[in-house]
Image (cartoon, rainbow, N blue to C red; front, side, top):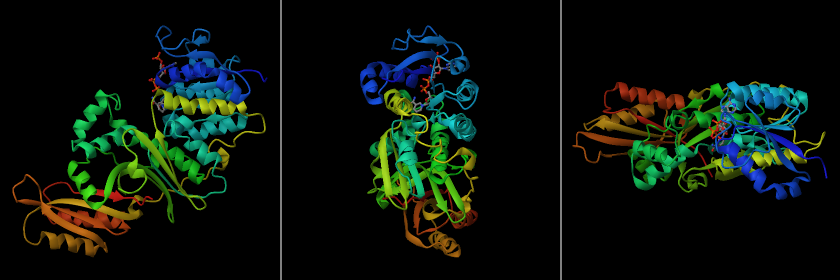
Amino acid sequence: MAEALRVGIAGLGTVGASVARVLRDKAAELTRQCGRDIIVAAVSARDPKRDRGVDVSSARWFDDPVKMAQTAEIDVFIELIGGDEGPARLSVKAALEAGRHVVTANKALLAKHGVALAEIAEKKGVLLNYEAAVAGGIPVIKTMREAMAGNSVTRVFGILNGTCNYILTRMEAEGISFDACLKDAQRLGYAEADPTFDIEGHDTAHKLSILTSLAFGTKIAANDIYMEGISNITQADIRAAGDLGYRIKLLGVAQRTESGIEQRVHPTMVPTASVIAQVHGVTNAVAIETDILGELLLSGPGAGGNATASAVIGDIADIAKSRPGFQHGPVFGRPAKELRPYKKAQMRSHAGGYFIRLTVHDRIGVFAAIAKRMADNDISLESIVQHAVSGEAAAQKTVILVTHETTEAAVRKAVDGITKDGHLTDKPQVIRIERAG
Ligand SMILES: NC(=O)c1ccc[n+]([C@@H]2O[C@H](COP(=O)([O-])OP(=O)(O)OC[C@H]3O[C@@H](n4cnc5c(N)ncnc54)[C@H](OP(=O)(O)O)[C@@H]3O)[C@@H](O)[C@H]2O)c1
């Protein structure tokens, strides 16, 4: 049998401790599958005394993950610390430069430094595997990098943040407000004490930026993502969406267009009958649309110790099975030096259908004025309905419009015009509609 593969785990928190546990519990199975033993030779975390719920005393302890990354006692460095700078970045860089394979679950690090790290890995002839960094346990990186050869991706989109999907699912199922759902999510451990990163779309954007690079062979451009979170989604939106045959999801979407690549994260209306609309709670899903395959949807657990560990272990097993000259190819699907510059499509030219909810004064002429603003901007309407705002005096009404395909620029101009006309009593709500199978 080949020599054992020696791994060093940096970070023994939710994911790191699960990885150590699965490597121990499934040792015999992994040896059978990989043709060699996988042993945890070294570990690093901040607190050497903390009980991790798994015995790692046979591994050498390192206070400094960078030192662990450089030691000749390991073949693979597993980074499960987190963060886009500091010990995570320094140790991953040190490991690659020392010729160690790296496995990481760190989307923030890859979104910011992925291309530079890939260049080092490719120069050194080592692997940088990151399946767990996007959609947790769902094998989306492997699918895009290995199983879709010859396909040209036209669009990739997904539910990439379990916290947001949990909140939107409960808002719809129970008719409760965003704030109440968020508090519950925090109580149950599905949302952080400071939830901004999740609910304003940053986490989704990090993951999307990695998928975009894989899909289109471009350099990662995490700062070029249009982003709107879910904190302004109300029960009125959710009810109106349901009445119209839609469900609201926070999607990350990357799409090739004539003017470049769109990367956007925003609340989106998807047809209630579509497959992605059936993805509920903390579950994640990624849809990949290509010229040959059509649309593929992968769904499953996007976070949690065991689900994430499953992806990390898959990456380690790939390294255990790989041999020089027979690996799974470049980090982002093509050599890092050949990744094309990212050409951003302007959000103003985004084409699609729109849902617009307006709260207006109940007076003669308002409805006609709204319709005129739409027509002036060449926006063709699929429907326009008005009804009294429930529980309010008849002084205001809600007008809900659904447009046929138009552009973001036209919608913004029309809504600005309506706002200037002085008919609105509240901020207008605009939600993009996404085609989904
Ligand atoms: N949790 C998930 O469901 C999930 C899903 C997908 C991806 N990820 C990614 O996986 C990574 C880890 O997440 P996590 O949830 O496991 O985080 P976590 O529970 O906060 O664990 C972080 C670990 O890093 C250690 N650490 C922090 N600073 C260190 C330093 N300077 N030197 C050595 N160790 C250090 C901590 O040590 P102490 O324990 O001693 O404090 C802790 O063990 C992140 O990149 C995250 O984005 C997580």
